[in-house]
Length: 112
Length: 112
DNA sequence: TTTAAACATTGACATATTTCAATGTTTCGA
DNA sequence: TCGAAACATTGAAATATGTCAATGTTTAAA
Image 1 (cartoon, rainbow over the protein chains, first blue to last red):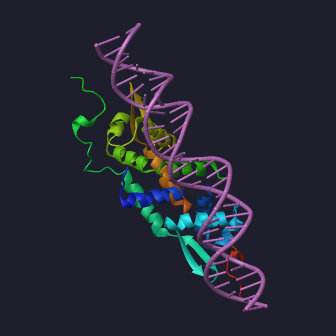
Image 2: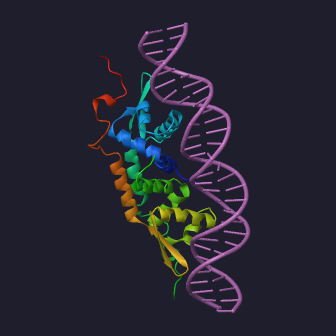
Image 3: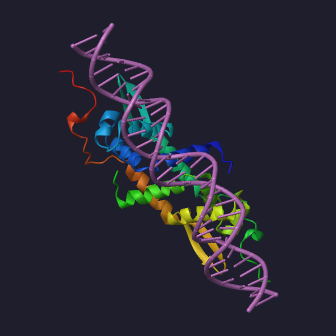
């Protein structure tokens, strides 16, 4: 399954969204941008675990990290979510250049 | 991280989308609905592996399976993708009832 | 009834993911 | 300069995921 770069990026995004902690972090940040310490208060996980999750979220480009003195302010990366939406739209869109469009590509055997 | 039922369903959807084989299957089915044997022709995996992936895709409700004689016709489940789109829209939408909206919930210390 | 086609299930294995405690790094304030 | 706050990294362990060969099940055709 050798996929193109864009697809691999999106698979990384889907993996990032495949965890309840990270979904909860996105919910919190959709409400208000905040630093890791504040996020940690609302979650039942250790500091190192949160750091691990934030790395996955920022590397997927769904979340932005901005350093401010000793803290890091995390926020939703709108363009990351925009990319996700357009990828999904395109994924299931009917394409003109479908390689299975020829008549003999079906599964059902001909009855004639 | 105890999440609601809807969120758990969506995490299952994101997991389903987190694999290159399954993305490729969705691409093929977006082009044309087809049975497993036909899907297998376009993929470099074993039959049992495809069966495993199809189970994940159908259980996530992204793909529909319809039995026809000895074959199973797979197709895109539009309502599954619609649910995904609305979940994503809602996930990052600004909510009125944000619990972090009070002024003392920030990370930055006050300077007064 | 026997055979074969189409797909599912099982068991075994390799790899990936998630978690935490412990420790490292950077920055600010005393 | 020293200590503490905020976050990252590492190492170890448990669990989840993806893969295949072998085998099971169902259905239709011979």
